Length: 363
Image 1 (tube, rainbow, N blue to C red):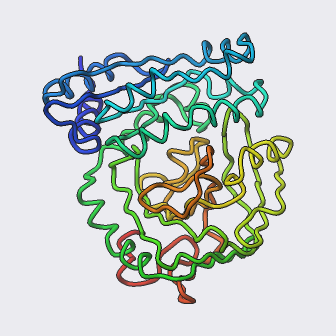
Image 2 (image 1 turned 180 degrees about the vertical axis):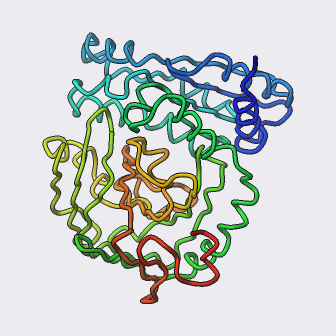
């Protein structure tokens, strides 16, 4: 029997997020933990919308580990030109990342993963900048374990966070978008955080189910050299197969000049030395999804926690380009239940709740 939740989500991804149209070439990439029945629903929806070609790419984390472990330098440094050429023909992209084991690549040196990320950057850039794309992470037992939930409860959590009225959500985000778009300075204050950013002249972008699923944020980007102060992130992060917690950064003239962590500190310098942009911020965002209230060690969910922010070392998005073209984009999250957020010196959020009357519907 069909899971109606899968059917509804597939339709949201195809009809609303990727906006698949007649004559489109669609690339659907999925990993080892994704149920085939869900991919079948996505494929069916694309075909019914009139896509002329739906390419299905399967990725397996164990095979990825085997590649990194067995490949010699020439193989690691080979750039798959054919993949870039195909991506140039793609109109819509749907990515479903559902690895059986989130930590499969944890034993691979960070230098190798960072180098590979730099090498493949043109393919990702083409996808991000020139397709109608959306990504999600379908529930697996590994994710449920990381979240401290049963698999059944985690599935319910996932569908509650994704299967919502995204057009209504877009309308709810509009006032914050307008406010952030006319703001010049942002200040975050908490017992272990005091950082100021300039966002003068930068646009604010709503995230209303078009690119991530689940979604729910409004973001901008600070001027590249504007960040001053320090921040301690209070949400753990899993990035490039490495676990980090208690990450702390100090900024001067926009650059991370000091970094430490309670866990994962031995990997920080490798990440931050990926390229010049890795030490500068590419995104600042408010998390707004009311169905997500606590971290589950999955960035796609954690960055949307209502009452959180994320301040991201690495690449800026084209819609809000501050000049940072790093190969990394590391969304690090801080829940602001113990803090305050000021826009142009005016308190807009306290204890993770918006205080301005026009923004209270977002609480």
